[in-house]
Each structure stands twice: as C-alpha cells, then as structure tokens.
Length: 208
Image (tube, rainbow, N blue to C red; front, side, top):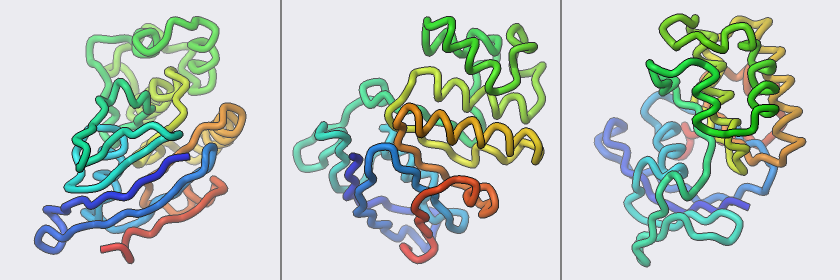
C-alpha cells in the first residue's frame, strides 16, 4: 500500500497555492489522474519518486517511510525503486535502445520480452536520435518496466503513439501490471486513454 499525506506548493498555479494530497493506494491498483496544466499532476509524481521535496507531510510504501518532513527522512530515488516514464522521455542520447534496458537490468530474457512488447526488437541498436517520437516514448516505458518496479509512475505516456500501437501497448501493459502486481499512477490529459485502464480517477481540478 502507498500512503501519501503531503502539501505541495504550486508556484505556477494561482500565485503559489498549496495542493494537499491525503490518499492511500492499494497494492496493484491503478490510479488515473486528470486536471489542468499547472495543477500539480507531474509535481506529485516527482514527489513520490523522490525527484522533488514536498513542503510538509509523509509518504510511505508498504510500511517503509520514504519521506517524513518532521523526522527529516527523504529516501533517494534509487532506494525507492520506482519506475518513472517522463513526459519528455528522459532518454540517454549515447545509448542504444537495448543499452537503455541493460542499464536497468541484466536479465536478458526480460529485455527480449520488453523489446518485443514495445515493438522495438528490430531497433535494438538504434540510439534515440534515430528513433521516431513514438518509438522513443515506448522505449521510455520499457526502461521504467525493466527494473520490475512495485510502483510505476507514468506522465503522459502515450501522447506520441498512433491509435493502433497505443491500443496494443496498453493491452499488454494492463496484463503486465496485473501479473506483476504493480501499483500504477498515470497522468494524462486524454480521458479516452485513461478509460482503457480500470482504476480510480483523481481529478486535480477540484483539489486546488
């Protein structure tokens, strides 16, 4: 279970308003986040992953404290072992598609399975500059899955994909998420994409 009780200052939204989140997410559940730009969706993901620090509060995962402002606990992103799909992909320009996955895991069978899942098995030696935007986005998703995370955070993960590839990939992701029991939080402006996943919807428009 993921337990979040934090305050986040939104500098770009209504002159620095505080966003307060107090939620619990069951292990293996899918949480779908909607809301306007600047309402804190991406910021929340970064706070959970340890890439940012809330103003106040506590974040716990499976009984382990990741962040506690009073106790001055703030585990590094590496210790949280979270899979993160960045909106801008966050790929390494000098690494091939296969090397991105090898950087995350040495399980060759898992790497082959992921490359097949993302339809990148024919592009293993291609660097990001030689991949299309959709292929880069799929590689970012595969890299996040490579560490077999217990928590997967995805920020606009399907925006560059055409409908055929998106439908196929989401079907495979739904199966993997369920099979591996991954708690998943998805941020998207596309309600149709989110409706392809079963899970709870959080609308940030009403939280700020």
